[in-house]
Each structure stands twice: as structure tokens, then as C-alpha cells.
Length: 316
Image (cartoon, rainbow, N blue to C red; front, side, top):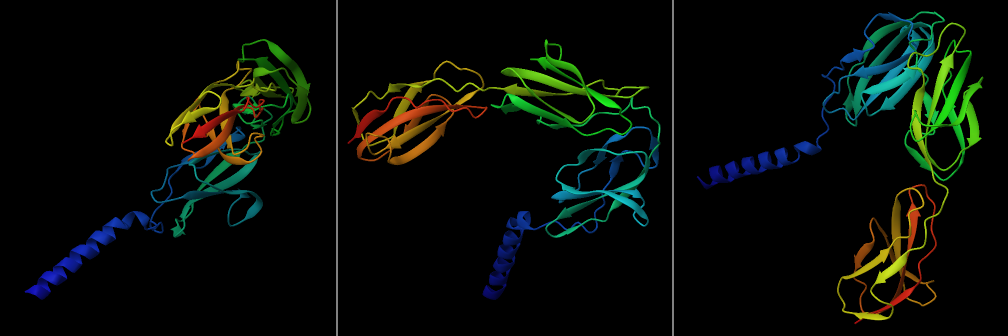
């Protein structure tokens, strides 16, 4: 009877461990399929820019997307082979017949490929196309006012029209309209938020969405000096967590974060510890001793402000 009970307990223990570890087991993908969604199989279109889209596969950690001109058994040109962790990928092609396929992958294996065919005709009409902007990234914040704007070339485009507006696309022009024969321009711009857009053109049509647009914030001004509030200079505090607070200077541009520094010497050269703070206070426990502290602001564009004055604190 004791042997039966012991064996039953072992079975329960083994089952418990097995289920507890199930989250750490890599899922087997070999019997799973990828369902392609768009562009539809055998689609014939004049559109060059497509969003390749498929359903997520349970257990897949990434997806291998491949595009060839011709077919995978008779490749004219190997266009794309990329591994991504999303289920959508935007890419611009050119007139021709293509096959594209996707498989799900993880550390333990992969699914079979799912394959679709896509045909793009050679029409010069670019009215349904879209210019793909490449840099700067959308919503980027920079402290460089000499900015380079780049985009992908579009087949059958003769040139590109770029405009840069203040704050919103409907705001005042700060650059352009400028016709560009290549795929980039570099210009010096004022501080602030700007919206830039590019349109492809040829003799018979323009891109349908008019302008592809992105937003950029330029901030070249360093933050102002921080003013320390508490504890007072040469204050004596108990050996526990104490609150250090300060006032930021007037904001000169983008959002601020602050760094607080603690030193063991009055010249603030022997750094003991530092912390980055979102806000204007910080709690810390330093241990018994004499310390010196100061604070410095940095904005979202990477501009660094001056150090505050140094204060002394005695921990007993």
C-alpha cells in the first residue's frame, strides 16, 4: 500500500513539474501553416508599393519573407529575403511577375512556406503609388538643424516634390516646394516641430496620396541650469532614505530628464553614484558620511544643460 501511495505521489509531482515547465518549451511549428492575406494570390495591378500581410502563427518568434521575380523554381531576380517579428512588411517593387512566400520560425524549427503570385504591369501611371520615406524616422527628435531627408526611388517617377511645413502639414512653409531629381535633400531648418512630405511625379501623373509625410522636431538649445531646493547646503540628515529635490530651469524646447550626482569630495570629482530622474526629486540612502551632490538636465534631443551648484550633506 505504501508503495502505491509513493508511486502516486511521484506521478503527481512529475505532472506538476511538466505543466510548470510547459511555458518554457519551444512550440513545434512543423504541422502549422502560414495564412497569407495580402496582396491576394494572382493579383494583377499597376501598384508598385504593397503591404505584404499574413496571419500570426502561434509559437512563431519571427517570419522569413522572400520575394523573387519569376518563380521560386525559376528565379529571374532574388528581390528580398528578410526575417521580421511582425506580420506586415511594406515594400516597393517594379513591373514584372513575382512570387512571394512566408514561413514562421522559432528556435526549435519552422513551418512550411506559404506562397502567392503577384503581377505588376508596366503602366507609367503612378497615381496609385506611394513614396516610401526612409530618414529621418517619423517623430524623430534631433539637436542637428542641418537635416538630410531621404526616400526610396519610385519606378517611372521623373522627379520628386518636397515641402516642409511648420508644426502641421497645414502650417506655414519653411522649405519648398522644391523639385528634386534625386532621392535626398539637405537643408538647415529652424528649431521647432516640422512636417516634411515628398510627392513623386511624371509627365502624366502624381502619386495618389499626394505627399508621404513625417514629423521631425529640431531642438538645438541646451536646458537651463537646475536650482537645488532641499536639503539645504551642509544639512545633517539621518542615515535613511532622504529626499533630494530641485527646480528645473525654464524649458527651452523638448522634454527634460535630470541626472543627480553624489560625490565624496568638495570638488565633485570622485563620483560615488548617479541616477537618472524623470521629475524633480529623488530618494536615496547613502550611508554614514559627508557627501556632495548636484543635478544636471538633458532634453529629449540630447542637449545637456549646465550643472547646478554643489551642496554638501552630512549623513549620521
